[in-house]
Length: 217
Image (cartoon, rainbow, N blue to C red; front, side, top):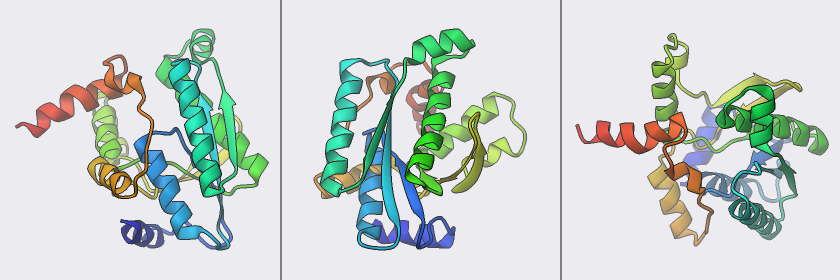
């Protein structure tokens, strides 16, 4: 799969030599796969890798374990690590947002801040083919226009409250099954977020209920 990812990166001009890439790493299967593949591809090259982890202050001990896991993995791969900690529930209440919206907001603010500290010009996020399908359905139900129905793009410039950031998604063409196979073949562990299995967020309902129902048709 490493060659497939490299070919996708090259075809979409996602990474060039001299880039300083910040990787968003939650500790989940997708982000662990992304960091390991990028480390394998660009170790001892002119491309420099850094990692950022965001603790949302929601899952307490489970989230603490996620942070410790990511930090240990970064140490093994010799990738500089930076973590941010928020109380997303309080932020959501204060700003009148859902927890899902508040979590997304602080993640991208953290990505921007970490990219400045590490002098990174791009941020790699581990969205995959399954995420893209979920996004298209999510946008459809919100009444999105044609633009929203095109799904996630492999490279975008995103405007945040703190500044513009360039986002790349090297795993966007890869399925979740392929990711889990890669992790198994390389003896790589990952963390599971228990909230991903609860129907408390719109995306979870799409992932857990709607897509399985569509696949059975």
